Amino acid sequence: MQTNREPEPQLAFAVTTSARPSPRELARAHCLAGETGYRYVPRTHRSLAGMAADERLTGLIVVERGNFSLWVAGRCLRYHPNMAKLRLLALEQGKHDILVDALQLKLGDRVLDCTCGLGADAIVAACKVGATGRVRTLEASPLLALLVERGMACYVIDDPPALVPAMRRVEVLNADYADYLRCEADNAWDVVYFDPMFSETIADAQGLDLVRYLARGGSPSPADLGEARRVARRRVVMKDRRPGYALARLGFAKVEEGRRVCYGALPAW
Image (cartoon, one colour):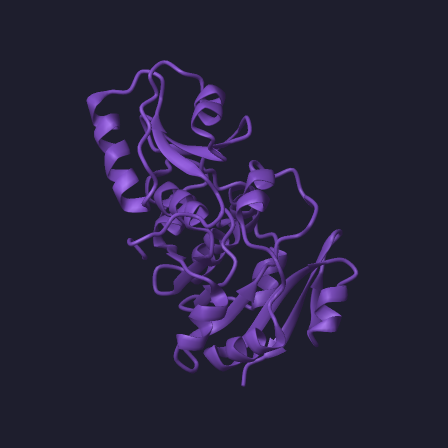
């Protein structure tokens, strides 16, 4: 996991605390400021909106008792596994997961998820490949990568029992997939997966509006896909909105289709 992070380009953020921070929260805030490169700003009894206006900030990283949150324009984003919980419950009941089917996952597989977001797909993949497999997810936004990395490391939930172990096994890396793929070895991963950010929300998932604001959008280029096919041992898979115009444009063969999304695959080279 990447630890030497740089501030998000063109986004003015700062680190602060909850309204009445404990000494431990203050220490964590200073450490986080040093790690991320953002300056620490004392809360001094101000509202978050007031702080952002006073300091001319786009948003704030707010250190809280359990973890931290991202605050942007009145909206707060805390880490949450989103649909991963319901999807794992469905798998436990013997139901199919469209992503698992598209990736053709089995125990022990190595999966590279090039588009982390909040990591729900990576969690489902980690559950399916088990403790003998490996899942690494890439996130180009330093803020999102930090939120997901810390969230997956400390988020606690009892049900389903497989969720927390799967979450802890996911490797979160702050990296742009275009750069990462060019440096990766041939056949390093069984499956390489892309889920480009849609321009509009498809499902009512917590925090996706802020994820879209912070994430770096765009589909992989033909050159990116060529590198992905070199890196993959079996296949490269991409998600698209129905009817799959982006899949067709990039040469994917459609392999799975749901009510609102579809998946395409390219064979590895």
